[in-house]
Length: 490
Image (spheres, rainbow, N blue to C red):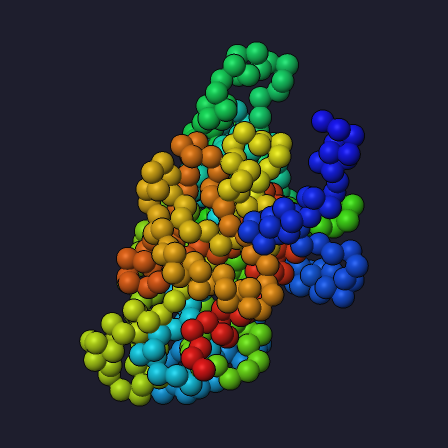
């Protein structure tokens, strides 16, 4: 090879056509943080301050519904009455047994043309008290628990815990309990075995280090009397405190709903405050962003926009407040009737379902470089790269998923592209390593066109999950565009 030919082969100008071709043919998802756009950064940070308040105020499904109703009513929504006539611009909500919710802004189009719907779940992994929880042992008083949802049990020991509950008293009145969230409150605790005596303990598998029966909450240690002949004097001391403060007797605990959650407030993470850390971001990060998108609608709608919050997703969406319940489609049918001003025909109800489109707004698994072997880097969603549009989740050979159509996937992403809203896509980790599900499968069963669309999360199902603030804000923007513009005919 001559010197001249060697120089030509390495000439950068010769690579230019290939670089242009690569730019034309390939696609990649980029990090969204732009330090030169301080206006956007300020908007992101301000939005997430409000989001952190929602995380702190709504640590259980009941509390999140209560918080949501308050926010809705502050912004012109009213409780939906099934026999009322609805008109374009009306804002209504309907609570589903205090643990689920449907909210809507009515559009001018006939409901037969379908609704634009976003559905999220508002329950999170936690510990529930057993029906008969209170006991004493060796001068300690404990509460027995039964874990709810998929947790790593060892994460729940040796951390401060808070108690949230709903109790019906003997006279039929109810009382809400929240202990451990305020600075002056006591917290609760599950003990851990000291490292000095853990030689055998450390040989166990992670799934066996702490058993479900060992998740016992330390709640007291002062007896009601110094008389050692008094039976269960430590337990009685706690019951006396509960009775004096709340009117609760042990019988009331049998029918109560009492949940144990981490006693930690949401916080900014990082020197640059790029992330939000907090309990229950799966899936309240999607619920809150969808809620704000609905509330912030400030223009007349063509298609009615509906936001649905489900309970029980973490245990399979069963139960009267879960996504499998017929209560949610029943509310949808009543909204159709109220907009029409008459009883809809069976075919009109069918048309409403078939013409409706939905985002199942559930979180995605963010790629974690510390545990890179659990992910396929080419098919993962990343914190900081925008909202994740996920065609399917499930496990193994795509089991337990709805697997959205290519047509709908393209329709949603082109709507986002049209509005300059960044998005990404990926799968739930490496094939055959595990898996998970969302409420999308149950909406698809009804005949609603649906795809998963949510915020990537680090440390999902832990006691302190992490999300990128830019993704949170992008989710809000994406949900807003979907509600206001999806399937609007010119």
